[in-house]
Image (cartoon, rainbow, N blue to C red; front, side, top):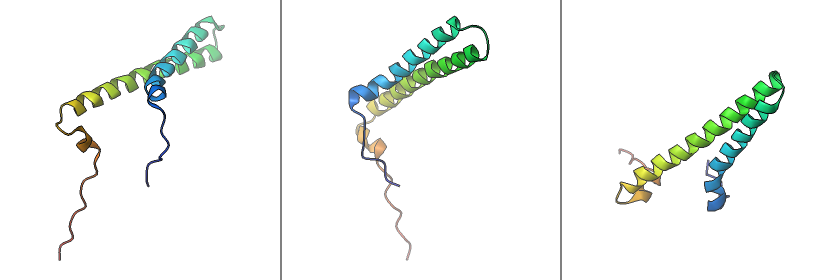
Length: 88
């Protein structure tokens, strides 16, 4: 299965975690103003998931970029291993 050739532009890609966090904060604030009940609880869970998801993505990207910077050839991390030769 080949990866899709469609990609997001760099500014959109870099801004997605911050968008997730902003939506999560908005959902958390909204759950605070909703009357206590199931809807408020669900909005709070969605908000918490958005904030945590955004933080996780930011930290994983940071760690990946730090790892790449430690290699002489950073693009070597993205290469597939060569196919094994068949024994005759």
